[in-house]
Length: 172
Image 1 (cartoon, rainbow, N blue to C red):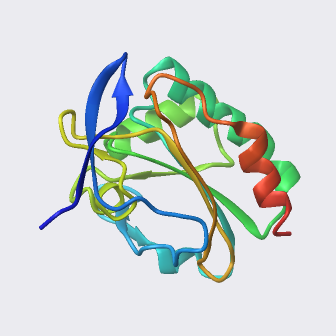
Image 2 (image 1 turned 180 degrees about the vertical axis):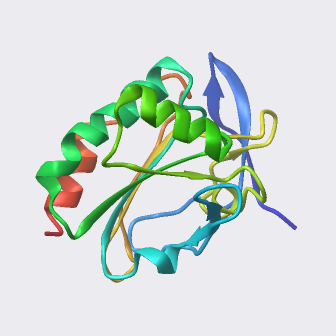
Image 3 (image 1 turned 45 degrees about the horizontal axis):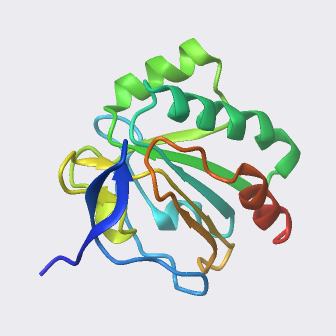
């Protein structure tokens, strides 16, 4: 049976249900399967040996998600080659590609959880009512141990960019 966390978060003040476990600092990062494009898949193992900043957004075509992804794209160059920034949403891969091209985002890798919602369920960010992913940030070290987690309480709020970036810099 899939774990549900009712009322764990809100969307515009209305309670929503998150599906999956609550990931905590010190946990082994759960594996997942997402899409790079309509055919090619990616898993956690594809980023082995790298520090991973995983930025989870409901949809790139909304204001806060747009700003969140642009912010991490701007910061990427200063983080070094051993850090990968993954932005995960349920947007279709070709919509992600179109958005990145229009926004000039080229340092963040966008991944889509549209097929199986594997990431959303493994990281406890799948919103049952909307079938979107709840805004959140995970920093996973090169050994796949979770070092930083922020689940947003309200879907429309910005994450703590500075804290996430400091967590990444602390691992370098």
